Length: 141
Ligand code: 5GP
Ligand code: ZN
Image (cartoon, rainbow, N blue to C red; front, side):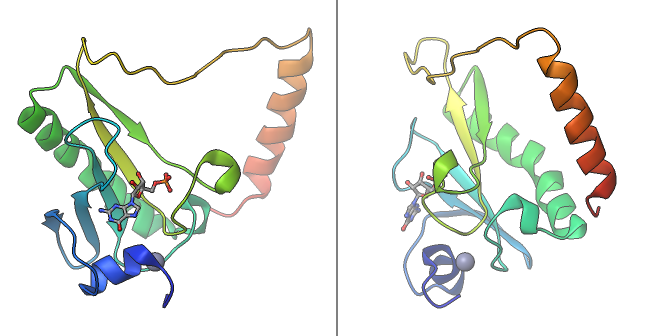
C-alpha cells in the first residue's frame, strides 16, 4: 500500500528499530512507547484490520506473540505486559495496517488504562450472547 507507513517500514523506505523479522512478519520498536520497550508486531503483507486476516496469517502472527512477549518482558525486566490491538479509528487505530502492541509493565510503573466496567440490565447479556453466537455461525472462518 503506497500510503501506508508500516508498508514503508517493511520495505525499508523509512527507518525502524527492528527486533525480529522473517519472511512474513516484522517486529519493531514503537516510536511513541506507552512504556519503554513497547514493541509492534505486523504482518509484512498489508491488511487493515484483524478481521481482514486470512486464518493462516492470523495464526502465523499469534504463534509469534508468546516468544516476542517473553523477549520484551525479559529485556525490560518487566512484571507483566499488555497485548493491545486496535481496529478502526473509533477503537484508537491510528495506522491502518494491522498491528499488535506488546507493552512491558512493571508493578510500579503508574500507568493505568481508562477501563471502566459497566453493567448489563437484566436479560441484556443474553440478548447480546444470542446475537453474537448467531453471527459466529454466519461468519466465515
Ligand atoms: P495504533 O494507535 O494504530 O493502535 O498504534 C499505532 C502505533 O504506531 C502507535 O503506538 C505509534 O506510536 C506507532 N507509530 C506510528 N508511526 C510510527 C513510525 O513511523 N514508526 C514506528 N516505529 N512506530 C510508529
Ligand atoms: Zn500497510
